[in-house]
Length: 463
Image 1 (cartoon, rainbow, N blue to C red):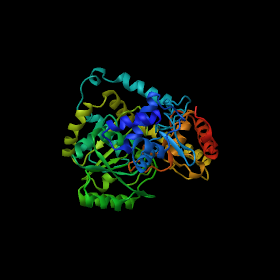
Image 2 (image 1 turned 30 degrees about the vertical axis):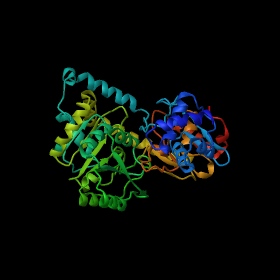
Image 3 (image 1 turned 135 degrees about the vertical axis):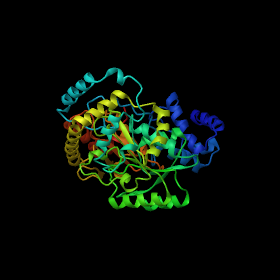
Image 4 (image 1 turned 90 degrees about the horizontal axis):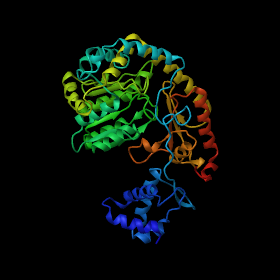
């Protein structure tokens, strides 16, 4: 019996989890401890089955789970090999381009305008006032400016039911704590924002994934789920969805809103990218205002560090109830950050930046379309990311491609990060924004294209 198999035999006896779930954990532990190293060949399934006295099918399922996590690679006739942990990519990627975090582009010429405006705003602000505790949900001025900003996407929202908070992520935590009762699930697309998966896992909440088509979330599947077990909430990212860039059609939105109303299922409408559209579609908050919590922010249409977001609840009473959960997690939004964002909305700097980012997105998407011409990918001129299919004939898996690109200081995110149904597509999300120039972005995209064209990289050792 190999040392690895002997160690696993002891650990399996101690584990309370199913064997197929424990196997990936053991591989990850052994890589971290050094017992296994990248490119080590794992025991063959039949040999391991005999050594561990575990059913062959169960072990095969365990190896499959390990592949989904990006821990191992398997090839017919060659066996299974340890991939090990890919090197981490710094936020600036070691170059000027970072394609893992979904950040808006930084339009040339806007930096000085934003810096000058920020200095003037902070320099004339009442310092002591901003250092004190604030009204929860933002000051009257901040809520008024946030409401003005929202008129673009939800023109008829209730401004008296709006709360200012420090980022969409925080708002999602509070909303799930408020809306999902024990035993209830969160209804989501089969591909969803990874942050939501992390939040649900931390809160011990289960996800109920739904299939999607070219129009987005499948409404028929949503209704079928509502008939069998009513979910606690429907979470969706209906405009420029992360990661596919799809935008729900008007008819699909109406269908989903109708189902939610008939079955009384609250909706969390994560509209992080909605502001990027010059002519946004009708929001779910407009179609089903009595059930929808509309969440948006400025980090995706201005800059990731501008942590100001807002939630529009169905009514004032709903907003008051939500505020309790938000207080428990954050106390209040940063007064300096909220004041700065509100002033930028008031003086037009936010709109100038948004217009510049929209123009920059169109330029970058045009370049990406040229680099990936003839390949299967989804994108939108309004968006600063794209969803690229990794063809099976290249020999790459999405996780393997992402890992190899990291050795080249290029960060992309494999489909496994977004999958909620355990069946991730062989695709990667590529961010086109961040601090790099269009030329630097083009060079990195060309490297991705070259790797897809030359699958012989698979047989080269990873550095």
